[in-house]
Image (cartoon, rainbow, N blue to C red; front, side):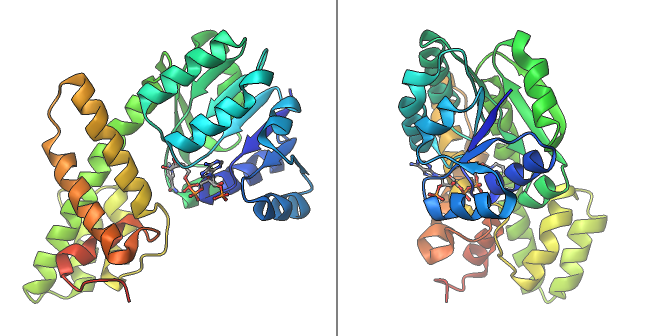
Length: 289
Ligand SMILES: NC(=O)c1ccc[n+]([C@@H]2O[C@H](COP(=O)([O-])OP(=O)(O)OC[C@H]3O[C@@H](n4cnc5c(N)ncnc54)[C@H](OP(=O)(O)O)[C@@H]3O)[C@@H](O)[C@H]2O)c1
């Protein structure tokens, strides 16, 4: 089975390294070709000049791209050559868009899985990702075996789109949670508490502590916004949640409010920074210096 990977961003690069180290990666592609050249040179993996070339040389095509429009563009490019092949899309995109694309791929003689991930870039390096898979159940064991080279947990969530709906459940919670953490942190600091103590409390002793507060609270204390998960991606995910909630006819007050806060952080210049930069909205320090 030949495996190709398109998308060598923060996540895709690291996933590529894990697959390559397991001997499971045959060819890579990236829109900005310099990144693919660098990966190819460093890890001795073939580089495709176009995503269609990558698809032609692969049986399984893994995608790790930014958003709906990136995945739509790439899938439409490879549709003519997808017969007999499997697309595993690890990007976080709209479930509705993904289901539509899966139908197009099926009609062209291929199959598609949505396989978004829970975890940060560091967790990719530690192979501690959780992957949430949606798509035809009979092909799942093969997908699970492949993804096990870069993830500790690979869960089958149901038919196409279900992996992505599960991912939205997760990101609704962490989006609202980190915005709440920022609000709580700011209240603590403005009251005169030592920021380091507030961070330690949130990470270790709060009754609402979590893996997210463990990772993020210390960074809030030092205003270290080095990117693990960019504000622009959290904003995108909350926008997807807003649209899907509307379609489903369910209310989503917490994530709607959080979305406004991340949009504000972006408008102040924190789009590429880690999403904990939403703290700046509460601290009121204004645009990024
Ligand atoms: N970072 C995290 O911690 C994390 C965690 C869970 C899930 N995710 C999700 O995983 C996905 C990737 O995240 P990331 O952090 O790796 O993003 P990233 O660093 O911004 O990388 C995005 C990748 O998509 C490619 N791309 C963007 N637009 C494209 C287009 N129109 N056509 C072809 N390629 C295009 C980029 O190519 P260029 O190099 O040419 O720009 C790059 O390879 C996102 O959906 C994100 O929400 C991320």
